[in-house]
Image (cartoon, rainbow over all chains, first blue to last red; front, side, top):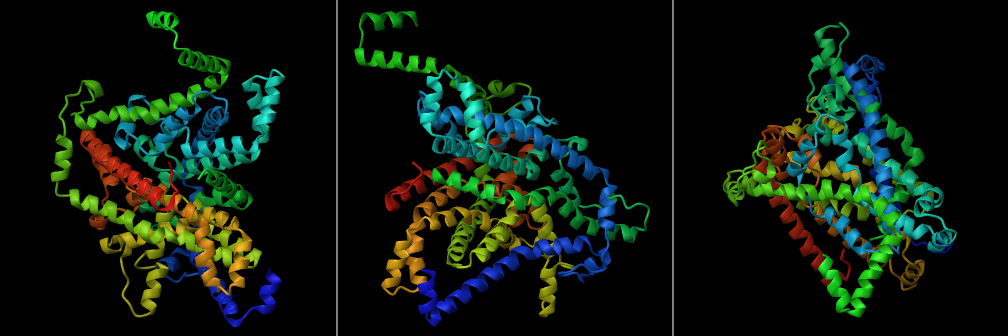
Length: 298
Length: 320
């Protein structure tokens, strides 16, 4: 097909190709530019950033902003909290999602349709913010990490993706055969189903972990104690409600401190996005796979 | 309980009884599957259906000391207060317009992107384009808004630098109500177009290549092939995603709106969900804002049902 097109390509076919590549190139520039600008600004002399001298490459390269982040305890506390919440949260997410997805994937589960309906209905209607907040408060979870983890223990979309995977990728005959051999459902799940489901488990870990890492709203309403703030909440204060006093200037002049406060914003963005962006190239195809599996159902 | 069993034994309705007993038997045989479901079902009951129970405070004057059940009923008072308030129309208009513009402008972009990717013949280049456009999806909302502020800063942001270069005067984008919706939707497109295109790209790869060959034989140009072969091939996916989007119609982008909101752009950034947050959580008017939240969910549900029905009639694709 390719060959035919090449030999017989009329000039408007070529023109079409040129337009396609041009649009694609412009899109890539649009997507990448803000990211490159942020990286460059984080390595630049703050005075030059504030004057607007930096537009693509770093000017007056230095790492002062990163150095002052290293000394900033709030950021590191937030970092530690976020890691803790992401690890504990993701573990609970995965456990709960498996426990729900596996039985619901079994065609021989009585009342399966009703149970699925019971669960999917919640995707379209809920009590809303206030009743949920009051519930979490009444359960005594406010100001604990459980408020960030338990109310979102299962994401229904992920549950459906995992169920679809169990149904479509693991032969039912295999499970029936295991039953014949007297294998219990728990053993079946642990020693046959899960080892065969590593790809989807990886996808789920990634979906949930990135979700925990990036979420800020639940922490905003449930966490009052600053020592328990996750990174995104610390970030919000530094980036969006910025006060130069919040940032440890290390005994330099006021003007310099304000400058540093500005440049630290870029460095903070880089440092906080680093875990996700570093793993991105390695896991990106798993993410895509996850979206595809999810779309099978549709 | 006992008597019903006896009566069932005395006057057996053969089919039904057998079915019922069969069900219990089948359930008992697989009791361990229900054991697995125990925690998840408890989770859904408590954290998804529990708040539905709590929703009754929308019709009560909730008093934390008396609890949900014992607070006095007040009927539709909170709803009336909301409908009569001076900000009702502003909130409703902002909520609807932001989402409607998003649907009209942002929804088609991933489709166009997928069609573009599908037309790129170099595999390396197409992969490059995809991988680059996916990146912003993984950046947190807080960081996105931080980057927006930096990019659009009136003194040092590259966008205003460019405006000045062409002789314009810098615009305080983040603080002007008139720019809010444009910035909000534009940055949403920037962040999500790549990610949302994945499903369309997958659907396009499933279109039968023979259809393209046939269209080419008939002398159809590339644009015509896109219009007559590619696009019809992904219509079912488009319809499903459209319905799902409408299902979130009244809630989209709540967290980002909250982060972008400031006293200067409030006129166009104040939406129902942010109002519920500021008035409910921050000021403690639980009953009032629970009512507003309920109003929001109801509109959302009605829209979803309407769109699903419309889709089922016109394109034979629907969620249910």
